[in-house]
Image (tube, rainbow, N blue to C red; front, side, top):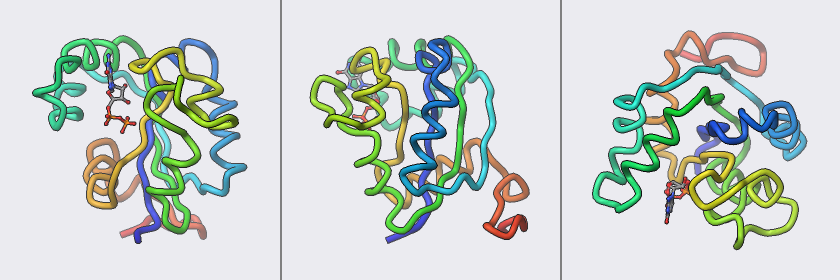
Length: 146
Ligand code: GDP
């Protein structure tokens, strides 16, 4: 099990002013922020990020939404980070998300579901590299992780 995952606070949650509350929730759940940045993806970048979902019927709508405003991208560290973070954020559809999870608290809909969380160690590494270079990712001691 790896100790790194990747997250994005999605445009809906940024627009609704939830950046601070979500980062606080994530920190209190025991995740350390190794890297963080706010940016707006172009449609092409969103299409590249979600290329695995290309064949799904909501791909166009999803990439339109994800490029509709700024997101906050972050690399998080915790033991067994991928699974632990998926438990912290809750089910994809907020209607099915457990009480107290990020999506239960801050999601609007199955698409505008407040946050992204990686689904495997391999994808966490790929997704972190999509947004950050090694010099943007910091260890606990404040050293760049090479
Ligand atoms: P996740 O790993 O929990 O984010 O879920 P998925 O990998 O299955 O889907 C990726 C993202 O696509 C989700 O976070 C949603 O934003 C969106 N999504 C998933 N299912 C649907 C759907 O049925 N309709 C729409 N419009 N968006 C969806």
